[in-house]
Length: 428
Image (cartoon, rainbow, N blue to C red; front, side):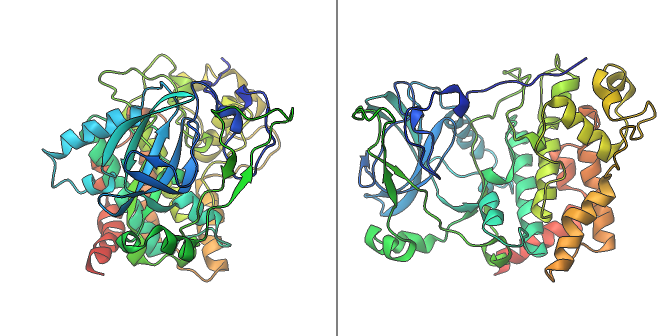
């Protein structure tokens, strides 16, 4: 049995029509049914566009000034005519919040501040306004020479992430796209006191490059005249103090309710795809798939590198990585995995002449050794033992054998190491 992957719309689905601009979304997405062209200084209802925050496959996100409330917001503008699943999920969370005001994970989901429709040359675009973040965890690591958070900061971030996932699951929601790029560090509320001019003085003016067609024809109304580079509001991972380690879990565009929406594919980044996507293709995904990706993300937060390598040729290569770390697959999967003989003997040992890198070796390579090299705190033996217990349980091959998010919330590592650091933030 060979495995194939679910395909989604990506940049390769469009012919190149414009001169590519580094750091800017694919300009070919500005077409009927696609992105809405936005320029700095535009108004989206009562919101003045001040800068760009980023973009994804189905939306662009902008920092805007609410001219009525005198506060900054993040405006996510979806592709034209598309259903905004994020809006649907946030509405459900808003309704759920009325009955779950005391759940610790509630505050880690950014509130839905506003929602409206913008008409443009490419169609009607649903827009949602939420609180802006300072930067993603992925951005903080990318900006860092160490690519490491201080250990107390990593613990506090992981604790909040577990709380957020436990809250979502309590409301019947699978996030389905948990990774460091979707976890944002919060911006200081002091930002609201800055006028747009003062904001530019502190963070720099927006930088844009002219959009040019390769055939030298004039631009259509549906294409912006300039591609805008996203603003950088953050700092390097190792420089982030515990006092700034409060987070949001964002981007609910892939989220779903298992009770009403059968899902048989995963669009999470390759390093976090759970094995049931390939070995149980007839079974719909549910909460355990989030638990697997949550464990992968916690590893990346604590360490310098992800647990699994990300350059997979296909699903069989992912399975090879999983077996390399955890050992032989369950018998009912192992026997139908035709590609196993490329890498392994029948007892699960390496048969391709390569030296395997099991769990403990990867932890040393990804977490401990880099921390020693940069003079940062390592994970102690007792903490490591507790961390291994919960992470390995969360990554059981069979999804029904994994702990729930609530179980994870109550784990020894969470109680003795992660939550105490989170409580320290509340006292700062």
